Length: 107
Image (tube, rainbow, N blue to C red; front, side, top):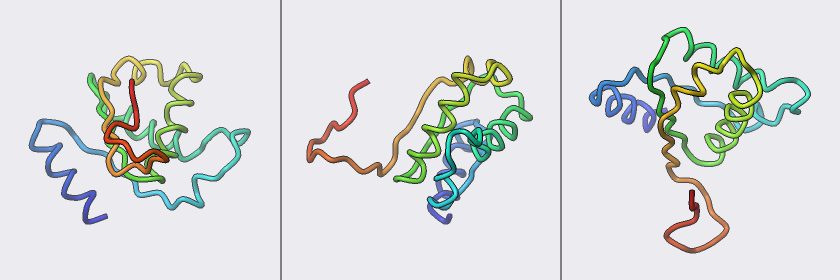
């Protein structure tokens, strides 16, 4: 949480409106058939701000799992089509990797 506030200030200084959520890992282990309620709640909160550009900054395992659920909802639910188009960037911060290589993700 204190680390998150630091980055909230950074993004705000860059002209973005930060929306943050610290989700315990056990809350993210809800089966897909339940529709990813945490991801939907977060996306509705973001949508209420009517952003034209969206950058996601995710931390560690919990942030990675949260992002995967958010991305699944963005891809399949037309309610969030505007957010899907607004997504301009993604920052993976402190994400674990199985490889000991400086570049663990190639997009």
